[in-house]
Length: 96
Image (cartoon, rainbow, N blue to C red; front, side, top):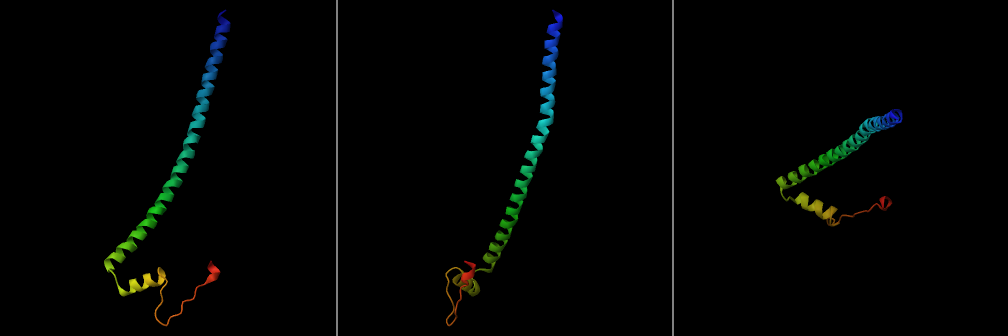
């Protein structure tokens, strides 16, 4: 009767070894996929940081310059749609 018991133990041990081998093979692949995704996220965040630094630099420059007639005219023209006296403003409708 000891032979059937050894076969069961042998089968169980082979199954355990197969599961361990499968885990050892699959886990690193899964980790590599996660690493690549996280690297993409880091690159995206680095790009966003770079853009925000540029915006901050421009805002600091504007603060240091203060309010000038040129900045007021630019805001009036670009944001509010005003024009200087006698000036004609043409709107390019092909871009819309």
